[in-house]
Structure formats: C-alpha cells, structure tokens
Image 1: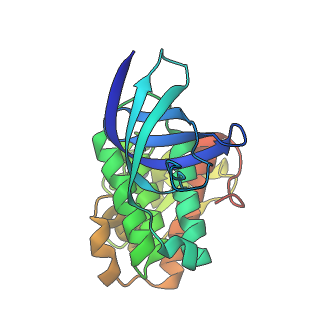
Image 2: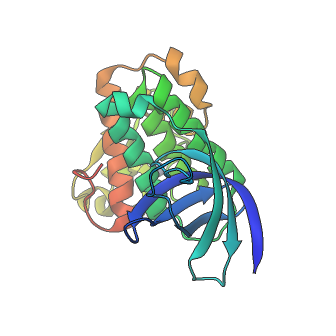
Length: 250
Ligand SMILES: [Zn+2]
C-alpha cells in the first residue's frame, strides 16, 4: 500500500454511512478511481470538509489492491465552480458532462489529456454563454479521444472525402457518416432506421468542435438549426455506443 497525491475532479459521491461518503474521482495521475472519504459529512470546525460534485481538488489517498476501495486521507478544495449552484442549466450541463465521462471510462487508466478536457469543459460550462456548444464539443472530443467517433471528414463506405457543400448521412449500421452517393446505394440507405441528414455547415461545425479549444467557443456563432443537427448526431452516436436510445437522459 502506498500514499498517492494527485489532482482530481469529483464525478459522483454516494453516502456510505452517517459521516462518510464514497467518492468517484477522475484524477490526473491515476485516471478514474473510487475512494472512501471518512468524515466527509461531518460538520464543525475540525471536520475535513465535504466533497462536492464537480469540485476540483488535490487529494491524497491510500492505494489499495486493484478493484478495492481506496482510502482518502486528505483533500483540499481548489475550485468549486459556484456558477453551477446559481444557474440550474449550468448545473444540469455539468451533471451530464461528469456522468457521461463516468459511464464511458473504466477505472485505473491514466489519461492526462482527458483530465484536462474535463477540467476545461467544467470551466467553459461555468463561465461561457455557449453552454450547449461547450457540451457538444466535449461530447465529440470525448468520443474522438476514446476512438468511438469515426472520421468526420470522409465517407466510412467508399473512403472518399466529403465534397465541399455536400453534407453527409449518418449510417447507424456502418458506424459512421457516409456520403450522399453511398447513402443512396441499396443496403446502406435501405437499412437506415432513421436516416440523419447532416448539412454542410453542420458537418464543418462538427469537425471544428471535435478539435477546437473550448475557450474559442464563446466567440463562435452557430445557427440554432445547426445546433439541433449536431445534438441529433451526438445522441445517435451515444445511442449506438450503448445500444439503446439515450435521448431523454442526454
Ligand atoms: Zn461514400
């Protein structure tokens, strides 16, 4: 057993007893982990302090065997994102972001770029006016990083680059976007349960969001129609990954 120190964002916490909680963190150095926080619900001067959802902390924990619950020994709050408690929409956006990451990631794999993506997203959701674009960028970048997002630049059937101003079609059965020509061909087109047409500007915006810095989004103007297309694209991808509709949860 060893003591480990790392930066951590709280993804989830559940009560363990009257005074303690089990917290799920996404950490810089150890990926996702669960730890028992003794006394985290205690009140009073000598109490160690609560562990809030979405909070950014420096933690020290006693590392246990793989699969066992680690023991949190110290935690210091670095940032608690008060905007999430003042505006319900920001709160739900942040809930969704941490929940999505929690659902897609297994414990124990270190991934520093992903940690920074999560932290940048929380900053953007707490501060920027383009909350839905921040969330879309987070979803697309998360899916891309984890290898779930097929190319947004070329057809998954014929491999050709999407012509300028042509858009694309989402093919659920081919796990990716196809060009207009391929979508018109027998099998791919015919088997579409719900064909999702993506306009040229939705396609180029998706490409931009999948690779941009989240701080650039505040100045980006995207028409509502394009935002709706991108929400459908993201929902379709996530439904494919889970094998069931995720519309309501999203
Ligand atoms: Zn094609």
